[in-house]
Every structure is written in structure tokens, then in C-alpha cells.
Image 1 (cartoon, rainbow, N blue to C red):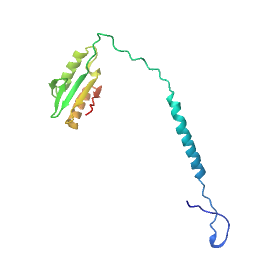
Image 2 (tube, rainbow, N blue to C red):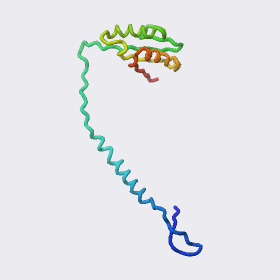
Image 3 (cartoon, one colour):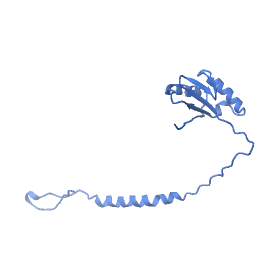
Length: 147
């Protein structure tokens, strides 16, 4: 580490006045504060109390609604559940299926799940998404499956 020495001398060894600030003590203090904060913060966040509601299973005999699933396969093949449809007929068939599943809610307010095969092109997937969103279906969830 290099250092400048100041002072009055004379002749060829006169370095002039040293006006550089020594930042070593400042860095030492900052490192000590950093270590103190790193050590003291985790225990304070570990004791945050959360009041979560208890998990209550549905009553016996209650029918659990199966989600409405749109399956995309390579070659622009589109299925609602296991029923084949086309991209142009997707919205009508989906609306009909959602009215059967839950007649109390409008079809555009119900959640729809999309699952696409690995071989489906991104453009084909986005065509389906644009078709859905263009007709008011905004509650769309994507299904990710582990390989």
C-alpha cells in the first residue's frame, strides 16, 4: 500500500502539503456495522407472528369442481378437456363448457387452465392466449409439469 508523506522540507524532497483523506478508519467502521447488522437482523425477522386461518377440509359429500383445462398439442391441435376444437371455435366451446360447469358465474369470470405439450410452438400458444384475452377471458392460469 502506498502512502504520501507531507511536510516541509526543502529542495528536491519537498512533497508539498498532503490533502488526501485517509478512508481506512471509515471502511473499518462500515465493515463492523455491516457485520453487526448481518448478525442482528435474522433473529428479529424469525419471530414475526402470523395469524393464519386453520385449514378446513370441505364437508363430506361435497363435489369438488374439476378445473376447465385447455390442452395444446403440436400441429395447432386444441382440446377443451378431451374434446377437440379449433382455434376459431375455442371461445364458443369454452363458453359452453364453462356454463355447464358453473352456471352461476359468467364464463369470462371463471378460471381457465392451459397446458401445452413440449412440442407446441410459442406462436401457437400465443395465438390461443390472444384469442382468449381478446374475448374477455383474463383469468388464465398456466400448468407446468415436471419432466
